[in-house]
Amino acid sequence: MKVKAAILSALLLAAATGVRAQSLIVTINVGPNQIGQVKTTQGITTRMTFPEAVRDIICGDLYDPTTGKGSFVVQRIDNDVFLKPVVGKGLSNLFVKTGEKGEHTYSFDLLVVSLEQAHRVVNVSPASAAPQPQPQATGNSSDDSAKILSGAQQQADDTLRNARQQADRILKDANQQSSELYAKALQRAEALDRQSVSRVQEEIEQRFVRAVIQGVREIKSADSHVVTRKITLTLDPRVLTFDDKSYLRYTIKNDGDRQFSFSGLSLERRSGREASAVSAKVIQGRAENRLNPGDTVMGVIVFDAKEVAATDKLTLYVRGADNTEIARLNIQ
Image: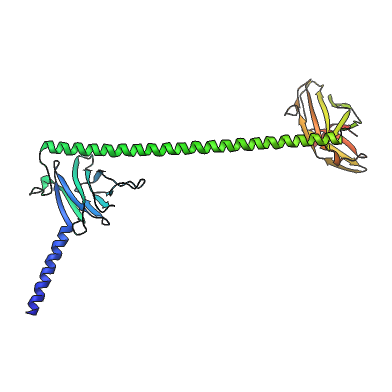
């Protein structure tokens, strides 16, 4: 008796397991005017298999990761559509277009149910291929079908409109933030410019005050002008010094009938037999060191007065290509 009871229990368990396995994997026959029902549950992915490649899917309550709104995550791969609800309770609908040109459209209601009731695999086939009518299908009249399709289209349009409005808001917010950042950067730049101008003005005033306190010194130039190669080099008769800076104005004139060019001007200090260059800044009336016949250029040479002793011999050189000497004048 015990053996028979054990065998009977095993048979009942196997039968229950077979029924449970069959309830997890179902076949739904859906026609153009029918709506299939798919049961899903949170934490489980349900696979829907179609006889043709899936072209488009539209879910009425699709999950949006940007806003966190929506009930279903939907993905498609080849002939399969994968559904996963992100809520414990909910109801939505799904439209799936298959075929190369999307010639077949399937309609479904999506339900979020308990774990025991949820489908794991749903095999979908056209209703015409099934010998029995689909029990889950609801509504056979043309009016009902038109209303369902119209409602689904309206819901799809609403979803698309909401998505566009959200995208417009995001773009508007981004543009506003960009404008605010640009305005702040511009204000910062203007503040820095004002500070820089203020510092320059203060420095100029300080230098002017020091110059007034120290007084303006001057020395007479040893040579006033020289003519060489039809080029006339002329110096002001005085070198002005204030705030430890010396200023000497010069003039170069091309008296020849050909264009004349020079590479630059330099100062040289000689103390006894020792000669060395003096750092100087040349501020000239034109950027190019090139003079046409009859042209004149004027400029000022600025150098540190402390670099030249009163007993030193200071000479100004006009140099050409390869640092060759064109003309020179003794300043002191």
